[in-house]
Image (tube, rainbow, N blue to C red; front, side, top):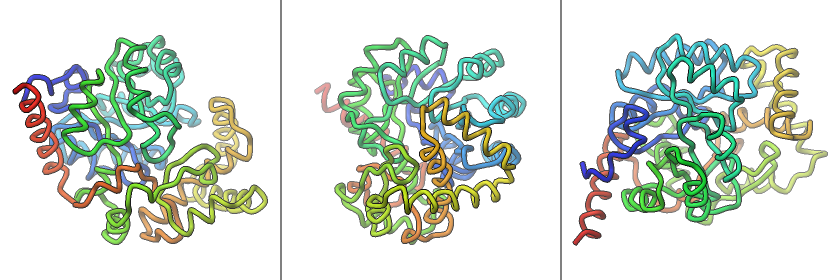
Length: 351
């Protein structure tokens, strides 16, 4: 492999290539995470949609499938966040990631035990804040990315963050091939993270009909809506999501509350814990109670599409990159291809 592709991120996380598979709810489970690890990248387990016992079970399943390094994604505002951190430490997980800025105490808890901590951030000030708290790297996602997203394109947000911190920066939002990897490295990133591209592999647990639905979309067939969970969320454009985007609080909140209750019953969380979690989320993310209820609604809307195979009844998080993806390679084939493409680009630029 070209020496330029061996970045500080590789040494930090114990991986071979600077490619990260993001923590997609209901998608980034043991098989996909292990496949990414075995291919030399960093797979991240999406534990946010799992209860504590499910998370531990998935971690152990990954360890049965690979002896390589992998990460587990946590929610810093979860009532049992510290307990989950203890589980990562006990199970020998090497990397902890957070979908939002972690609390300083959680960072210390993990780093004192030798774990690498990598939160996802969406603004320069967030990167500066967590860097001051001692995180090891940050994942920065531009507006092209799927799921929770901002309005600043990756090509502007990435260099802004790279210039602001002196820790490795992972670029997300719009990446799918070797050209993108080289471009990210040129901006100063230490690697790229991809969600939609990993979802569309043979190792992804998503059903074939849903994968085909993704493959049939163009770059203009996503929308950003606040009606999924109260904050901007990029999803595939469907009749359901367009209708959802047009709804107001009178109709959306009762639906969200129903789905929130369904999810918490499914996860086994008590109503006391549910209320405690909501209060923590409201405080940490500065959300209204309406937004908190809608946030709890999200897992069931994702599950309807990703697990139940009903894109007509759920939401499918997706980056705009969906429109330039047209195949379903294995994770290993994908990573080998990206590295080969990147090496070809570097060779061409040097000639």
